[in-house]
Image (cartoon, rainbow, N blue to C red):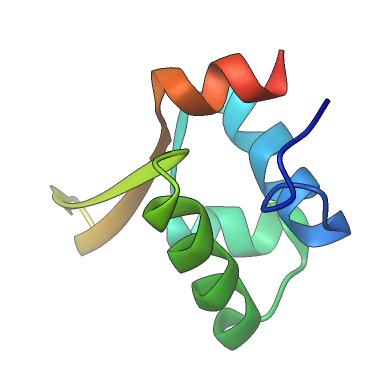
Length: 79
């Protein structure tokens, strides 16, 4: 049974993409889910507070990007 913080269509979509890719930049996650930046940020903050995801800054060829990764707790919730 899913946690109430995951049972939301957008958060289920985010967690599904992260389950498949394990980690992805916020920009690519926004494109993959078609969730606008403001809404995405709100949903990611909620998932991060619960420990389902973690965000970190990474230097890429395109500059500094925020990478979102699913945690072990997140994986266990989605399975």
